[in-house]
Image: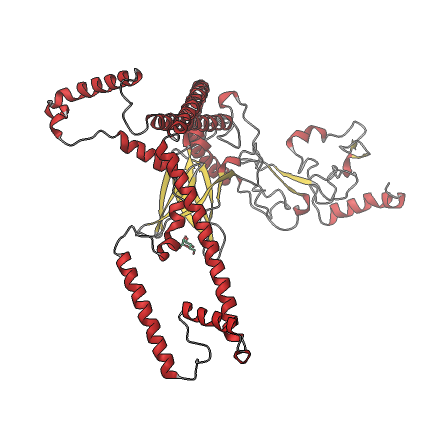
Length: 559
Ligand code: MAN
């Protein structure tokens, strides 16, 4: 409530201000057009604040003194806080400014009629500005009109695409069912053929040759184990005797010990322990003897080594393990293959050598049929390496191929389903599907040393014009991440992220800024920060139909 003493002062202040500085302003100055009819006095010469909270004398409206709680009594002055002033801007478009800027001595650009300041301070430029604005608007509208026709052809394309994708998905669903059955059948065939070939293998393993080979192998393995044990035993024994030789006390004259030491020295080719170091000449003589002994041994060895099949001690150490680990099943199959190979000692009886080329295919076919028939009757053995194995391989291969095709069908179906979901999504190809046309479309623009390639919804690339490394400037990530999907500007920005990493910096990324234009074209490229690129361009997909077209009502214009 305003204190009564203050109320008494109000007419005085108002009168004083009216006389001294502020020329009386229109009661509707600064009132928005839709509120104008509310600014009329009652018959009693009063007026109600817009929030209905208070009734004041009509003179108090726009008197530069705030009376209403909602500030509605001062639309044309800056007297009430947090209120808006409306500039009519006749000849152009009306606009609001915060009331605090009214009569602050500055001409607001939004008020081209200068109504925000006392008359005479700011010029009224609305006519020229309005004309300029309308010219620009007309040009833009013309562009939008033509562009929106192209855009609607894009929408038609999207609807066709939708149908095509739906048909694809339906067809693929059928193909998948058929392929799944085929895979199931081929798996069954492969498993059965493999078990047959397993049975055939088991049967081959019963061959006396194979059985004997396995027995030999086992015996050889046992022998190797024994041989290793023996070597270890020799080593232990030699170390015992060596300790005895160096540690016994010759003063005890124990003949049994002396005999054992002498025996060991002789066997190992060592000098007698008492002579070691005493008589160098004798040592040398002994050494020479030992060399002679070695020579004889090695000569014997040489004689034996000449025969490659002889297993020397070294060869036993080196190759025996390999021999024992032979894959006997492979060996058996190779043997079988070898044994079944037809024996050719002369070309004389190869009939195909005498046939003209034109008859060869018929001959081969007839031969295959005949051999298969005879083999079924058990008259001849089936030819080829191991028919059961070959059959199993073929069956497994057919299965693998069918599985691969099934995977491909499923992937294609998943891709088409995903595309189908996105086709009329605002964050996909737009609510009307207008961006679908640009999927897989690539545009280029040259700038500096590079050509920049934008493949919509895919990737942006930087290609050096005079050779060198090409960089990815990011893969499509999102439409404008700062706006909601229903914002009219949402599709004016695309962001491409996670490109090639910058040397000592971030991964390269690109922002693509688009406007309505009659063509899909790129205009400029800037590297705003290191490895952060901005590309501008136009697309008809952004040319929305004019308000009033397509059944939409034109909206009231406001700046
Ligand atoms: C390349 C280009 C440039 C980028 C540097 C960063 O030369 O991708 O655009 O600024 O690498 O090292």
